[in-house]
Length: 185
Image (tube, rainbow, N blue to C red; front, top):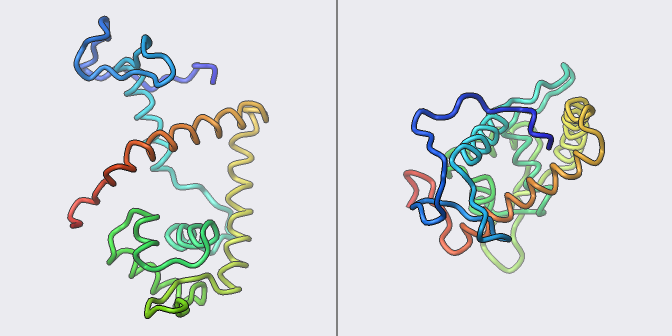
């Protein structure tokens, strides 16, 4: 990234880290001598939140709502899942996933099948769900292709690698003690 985008004015409580021993100082894993200052951390947080709240503007021919797309994405990535596994993958409450799954089943996109050797049922995409997911995935990819066109292939690959590294780092931090969803026991 060329650093030409700024995240806006610094937070009112901003202060530069001047000494490594300051409480809360974050260190880069590869270089313990280099710290991540508050401004950089805040800028990254702002951009991640800004990106996560975006709704991709889809062409008129789009028919799949965001929740159904996310469920179909999870099933395409992993294969059939239990409801509990789907809740964990999407990091959503049981009642929310249940409501979304019921709606997608009603549209003929999902179905339950028995898990071999157990009483559990697994959720999978129907052939129609797979078809709709492939179509919607292509529509969404086209939107991102247009947005990323100004980056060029090298910057897109670098961005994907850096986002992957960030996700991997967060996964490592949460692996020992998974985060709880508020209100979930």
